[in-house]
Length: 621
Image 1: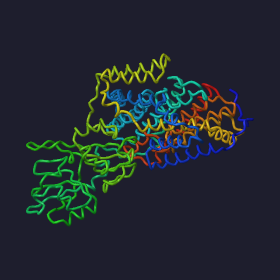
Image 2: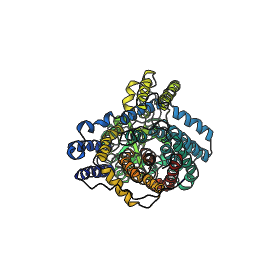
Image 3: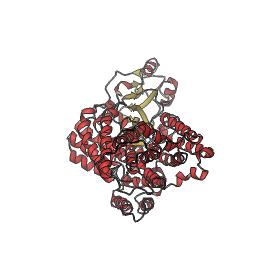
Image 4: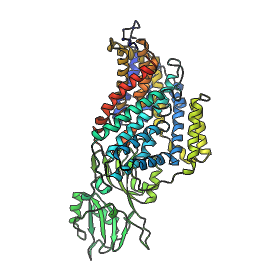
């Protein structure tokens, strides 16, 4: 194949105009807000819509066009895909597949890693990768526990594989669907992507990346979370759990635990009450203290010193505490509920992110006591109530099995350990798979567009009982929907005002003399790096107009540049904040921020080469 050398075109770079300056100002402010996130990403996207419409004389975006993103085929299709993914999730399909492969993997760390990569990668081609990773995190933890290995060895590869697998089909990620909607406009390709249009390249990317992960992950990923089956040890809780006894004739007898804690006014939580042969957990604050009661409390050093100075309370000698010591059983004659320990993860796209335990009313809302919070390698045991939660934070909680079952159904959190088995609609699995197959097959044969088949599929999920109608709205990640709807008009403004042509022209001048294949690879790499700062959908909206104009200026096939941008926007591999699935495994893996780049940087370079050359040899430039 002849490599075309990039040459300076006769087309002049358009002069900078007031209209361009206004659009660039909106983009710059949006980027700052995306990176710093003083407000949620979806709210930033809505502010972009407001700015575009208010400044219509310069942006050319009318009110009708400003809200056109809400009726865009991409937005509606992505919404329906969330519903379809929820239907599959409710049947336990991914969990069943993970359990079968776990049995196949046995005690071999290499086969365990291969199983996680394989299940995550292939599943993400047909189901949104966020629920795929959410369902496989507890499977990965279970696999690690079986062999005494660290889950840190499995969780980043799980996330990376889900990103690469999302490129197998049009419906693998919202990025693909959005890119398809953009290029379907007359000023671009004039047609959307077909269902399996880039499956060959997606398979090449997935296979290449999986081989790398299989051999590099064991070498490059350290054991951040020590191999252990005890959550108490994993969260370093022993030094923060102390037993307090109520001696005979103590002035504290006759008072409730809540009254005693209020008098102490320190950062201390009552975890368990031991009274003779009986043990009580859960909401014990209203229990009245009696002589010789023993309280197991979570407290820091300052709180322990305050307790030691309090008349009527005595500290017992420090003893080791296990998970079993914190778990309770039903007590005859008492209205007590058995308590268990579990690890949960704050969903990056959930309503708990940016809240605190206090403002979210966490204890009452979920009937759970938080014992520790882990963010990466840092673990917090004290003063947790006012600490803002972040997506990816791991929480060690003590709660009832019923409460954990409710958490399993709440999309604001991810249960990271298989301490309770959710109730799946296993009998509906064949129906769910048939519906997905119908949605994909009919769209692939181009009998009806994916927009129509996805709507029909969502209706079928409810009509056949795979989904309860009340579960639909909770299944949708509304932040993604508003983000899509808000950013679509920005791409239109970039093209109309000449902002895209201006950026493309200057980019072409900056790389004059390079081979087109090299320029294609640079566009891929730049888009991937931009996605580390912005969302994947924002990168696609900003980069497709620029890539299209740049390709036209150098005499290349715009299709090749659009594909490079689309693939790159789905593989931000260098930081935990670049993609939702990275944040989801950040806490459970106990990772350092740099662990993602340690494994992801070589993979990013490999994928740059593989994707670029794959585009060249499959479609040409």
